[in-house]
Each structure stands twice: as C-alpha cells, then as structure tokens.
Image (cartoon, rainbow, N blue to C red):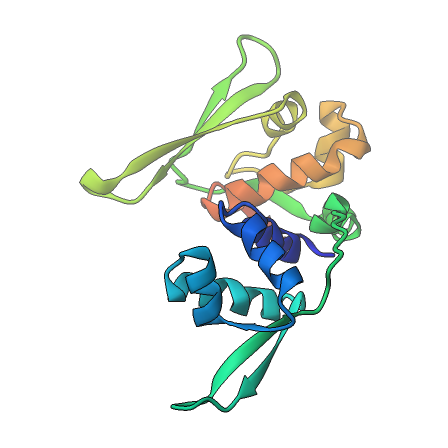
Length: 203
C-alpha cells in the first residue's frame, strides 16, 4: 500500500465518528448516505463524503438504485479486514539519487544567500535565503547536518569552475553513503536559486 493511500485511510480512521461508522457498515448489508447520517447524527454531506472516500479506496462499493423520488446510491462494505503496511523507502528513489553524483555544481552568482560558518571549522552551519522582494521579502534559514555543512564549505564560488559532486564529497571527506542528504540540500538550494547545476538537471 503506497503512502498516499495509507494517509487517506488514516485520515478516515482518525475521525471521531469513524468507529461507529464502520460498526454500522458491518451491521447493515447496504446503506445510503442519508440513512447513515440519520443513524449517526451526522450532516448528510459528512456521511456522503465518508462513504465516497471508502468507495474510492476500494473499501466499500456503491450501487445506484431507484427510489420513490429519484435514484440514489447504496453502499456496501467490501473489505471487513484491512492490513496497513507502509514501506517508507518507497518515498525516495535512491538509485535516481546515486545517478546524480557526477553532476557539476557551483554557487549561483548574485544569489543573495548568506552562508553562516560553524565557528572556525571548515563547515557551514546554515544557509539563509531570501524569498520575495521589497517589504514582502521573507527570510528562510536552512539548518545543515554536519555532512551538508562540510560539503557546502567546499562548494565552488560563482567565479570558479563548477565542481563535480563526487569530487566535492571526497574533498570534504564525506562518505558516499551520505549522498542522499547531500543531494537533498542541493535540491533545496537549487530551488531557491543558490546553486546552479551545469549541463544536466537534478530532476
């Protein structure tokens, strides 16, 4: 089960009326949104949205039936047992991250960012970027891990030739296993026009 689907299911389960709603769905062979709303003392739209989400997630099915005045849908529980398992590693394509190791990067000219050093060590503690212009300009401070700080210390200046990510890792003495967090901060700083990538993009 992917993360987004699990989040949607969790959102349903977290609602204060969800337990009573599922009890009702187990008891009734089928039920309409108006019937469910009256049983649980909910607004009909609340019941309707809940049932529609269950149907979209494949937990319930709906069938249109003819009523006295107009057609309506009746909902039936499709799954009475649900196991939720999340594989967080699926959120990141690490193979794609590793393919970025040979990209050439450098600090972008006139980015306006401020690199704050970590004392007198060869490490940057944080980067301050500015978003917007004039009175609407906002400041965002990005705190760095030790590896990220060491990496950015050796980031080529705008006036220098772009440096290969792998070569910067070696110069900074950073283990290649930390590449994912290095790529992450590069992508963030690229988004704020602090870093430029030569040739290929990071996407």
